[in-house]
Length: 359
Ligand SMILES: [Mn+2]
Image (cartoon, rainbow, N blue to C red; front, top):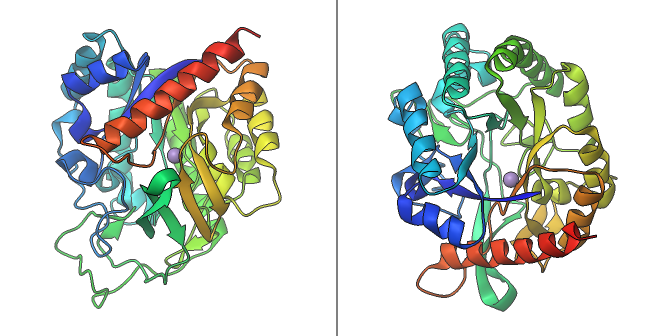
């Protein structure tokens, strides 16, 4: 297994590539959407009215040149770019909503996947979600009073028009009060129908480009959020997704934290065992939690409900050979809260990986 670090857009700097290398990582996952791209939030759910901010479909990073430059900058520090994470909501809002610009947006998403292949980036993580991550609050709930995010069953206002994936995709139509209209509820089967259509059109392009589409489960994993259905809120639905359109490029962005938050009948160790045996895990979000929806908090890697050493042992036993990244971590009380949290998680993971890999 390989150790990676996920970096938000504003953190994709030479210093942070060196930080990752110094902490023992060999791979980078670039998460390049949202407020994260603008030097603001790194651990919260963003502003309650505006979510993660305005989605800008024109960012240079989404061009072939932008991707090639990003990969070259990472390679220059002796690291590999493992994946880009998430399409910009403005790239595919009408794919998610089945809106009038769907065809044009599908063409754009296909262009991005083709350009990723040309630039030598082999994986795009994505989350086929209308509401995305929403409703978490930051509190001093992790060990030693470390600030961490959690979900505590908040009241769920409907999503205003002009917002998708917890970002503003249409500033002209967006009204944060929702008085100009909200996204109407629709069925889970309709969401699966949209998702299947997306996969059937995208996977042939992904196969040709040799780029894996890696699906993140819905976080928080509730059946509905803000009145809209969720796709992967029960671990069994990952199998439904793999069976829906079989393809070597139809893969999982396997988020152990989200899977552990699921209030389903599955045991997290069985879930890790079952899916690592399929060979369909593109990469792993390695994160611990306490609780399940609708009440949970994110914890330090060695301090939640999940025995993360056992998680690594299962992955190793099933010959998973991909990348693990820490996902989020609580922020540590010091001058560099995010970096300290990540260095702690990376060091812990590297130690356990070293021991387990000798068995
Ligand atoms: Mn995750």
